[in-house]
Length: 340
Image 1 (cartoon, rainbow, N blue to C red):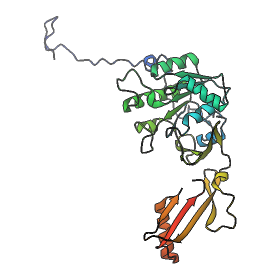
Image 2: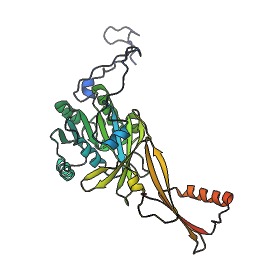
Image 3: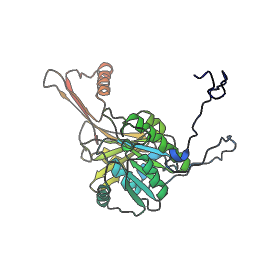
Image 4: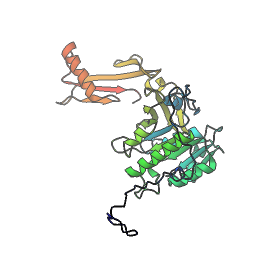
């Protein structure tokens, strides 16, 4: 605190003023000039449906709600090696009419070239760059002006404004928020690929799932070749749709008829087999259930279920024993859902 002015010698003439630095869009967006938004009333906003970008993948279009919305931020998560990068790469290579910028923070350009050769698809409109700096990514975006941006993965991207290491909570939060501003202000869709932790949820802060418009989970079983793409959050569509793929040597094949993997063909004349119809979204599924009940060989009866919650199976067995009168206390019960 200063009581006396050193220049004029008067007392109590100093007035405190807070100097705030004006935010610069050029610095925050890495050199990209973005228009400033102004408030609009509801009557001034033009109504209409969101334009959709065809991804040339019926399963992916269905899960997204009809296609990719311009200016949207989509997060695709899954276990390591499940096929996230393969799914995204083979999808963008089928879009020759649009310029794609694929930013890889984990793999080299030669590795992506080998994967594209294995998929049997080459596109000159898909540009590959290996970069982990957010500021340099904006420079590449400004120079190429792409129609779609892919970032693989968000945990490898870092900004120079923070001193923490890539993948930390602060870096993931700041980078995803900056990418969201870019997507909304430039109307450019962005696909983010994210890792998951040991619990199976998206790695990083929970705010990452709140920031993005759509969260897609790509999952599967190591004992099966089929993969499921489900929507956990979708601001532009339903979360009840499922996309099913088959992992092959030349990429992922779309499974348009899911009943082909949920039904076995050699069950005629066999007992313990039941087929039921279930609906996920707008598509029906024929599901085959296989059950076996036998006398317990050892003292404790076994309860085994594949593809079904074993706790729910125990509850159903208790209901059957109490209400129907089946004596299942000393029986081994095995339950299997065909297809896993």
